[in-house]
Structure formats: structure tokens, C-alpha cells
Length: 318
Ligand SMILES: [Zn+2]
Figure 1 (cartoon, protein in one colour):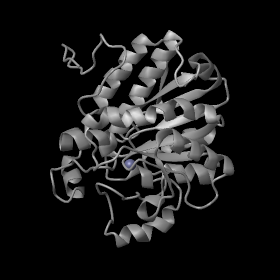
Figure 2 (cartoon, helix red, strand yellow):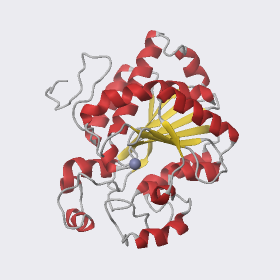
Figure 3 (cartoon, helix red, strand yellow):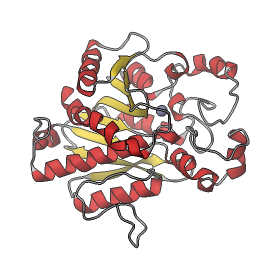
Figure 4 (cartoon, helix red, strand yellow):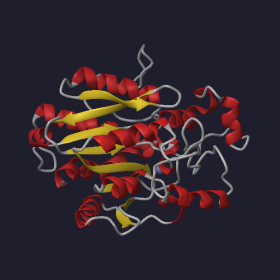
């Protein structure tokens, strides 16, 4: 790591970047700029715009015409930016192996590139991540935000987006059934966590991702990264097709993570359930690492090393 005149944390002398400070939006964008400069085969597009106007990048690796797309999504939740770091590191390594034509986990990177398209959205909730790291300085509505945070200036447990909606409760999956549960938990509006919003897909971050997934028929599988628990959630209602079950087992074997079915409040309004129920495609929630959220950046490498093989291997399972 170095701090050069551009105030970046990225080391231009290294081929593979390390993570030693929390990954906020601007650091992520600097890292992506470095990738764009280095890897002409990497395509970066916008997946939409956050509530505060930040462009949400999507990194596309592989053959656009192969018809087999896998989507990786990180940081639905503010204090889970470690998942953004994991996905950036994966993209970084993929690009290096591909450029050097070196095999990884017996996968030929040229085959992987030719036959699959991996779309990576490292940080779906950039506003929430910046609030978690920088507090109200990261928000145009500091007073309202503080109110939603119970009057506290401590935003280290902030999960929601820029107006207090928990993005992983904002999908159209059991949304109405969740409302009374939410009320019973004392949540009636914008909050640091678990408020589902006024209606499904009310939030721009969720609306744009749901639209993309609805209209891109080449998407075959979704992996959504959260922290923490070292678990893989794969279904809630028994409609998960057999193929998804067998993929889930393989992902579990590769990572050593436990297979689980979500229960309680976690099981409503999330991307995984929505994708299984609405799109009918295999979709998995990966709870990365173990400890108390927010996992510290010092946990990065140990968490990443357990997930690395899964991220490289998952696309060829479909
Ligand atoms: Zn989460």
C-alpha cells in the first residue's frame, strides 16, 4: 500500500491489490480505474445510480455473446463492504490469470472467458457503505439520517441505503408478509437495518438490478455476498430446483461453508428469494467470513482465501 499524490490507497507497482483500509466508494472507483487502465478485455458499465447520485459500476468479464451469464453482487448492506473488496480482488486475479494464460483450480482462463460472462456488481449500496464508514459527512440529509439512527452519530452498524431502506428487504419476495413482522419489531420507517421501504423495488439500487435481471435472459445464476456466518443460503420455500440444490452442495464443499435455509426476518424481501421465485434461476446468498459485523478489513485475506475457489468455479457449474 502507498499513499501517492492522488491520495489513493492502491499500489501501482503490484499486479494484485491488497486491502488494508475500509473500502469506501471512492477507493473502489480508483481501483476500478486502475483495472480499466490495465485490462483492455475488462468491460465496465453502469448498473444504475444510487439515491445520492453515485454511478453503480458493473464489471463484465467474458464473452458477451456466450449466452451464459453469472452475476455476483456485493454490499447490499452498508457494513458489509468487505464483500466489495472480495469481488474486486476476484476480478483482479481473474484478469491476471487470463492475461498470463495461467490455469487456476485446473480451469483454463481462456475457456472460462470464452464460454461464460461474469457480471460483477461489487457495491450495490454505495451510499450505505459511505455512511457506515464516514457517517453523516457522506449524506446530503445528515439530520434526517441521524434521526433514523435513533439520534446517534455512530453509524458503524448502518446497513440500509441513503434513506434508511434495507435493500435486501426491498425485493418483491414476501414483501407484504414481512410488513407486520417489521411493525412487530418496532420498525415503522427509515432505519439502520431491516426497514423494507414503502413498496417493492421502491429504491433505485434495487429497481435497476431487478430490471436488469428481468430483461437479460442470459443470466443463469446469481451469487449475492453478505457478511457474516460462513453459510450458503439457497432456498426458503422448497421450490428450489434440483439443479440449484446440487450446485449449492458443490459450493458448500468447495468453500467449507454450511448450507442453510434462512429463517425469521432474514427470509423476506431478499434478492436470492426473488430470483428463485420470480426468475426461476439458481441463486445463493453467501454469508462470508465469521465474527461480528462489520468484519474488520484485517479479516480480508482469510475470508477471501476460503471463497476464491468458489468464485472461480461457480460459473462452470451452470
Ligand atoms: Zn447483508
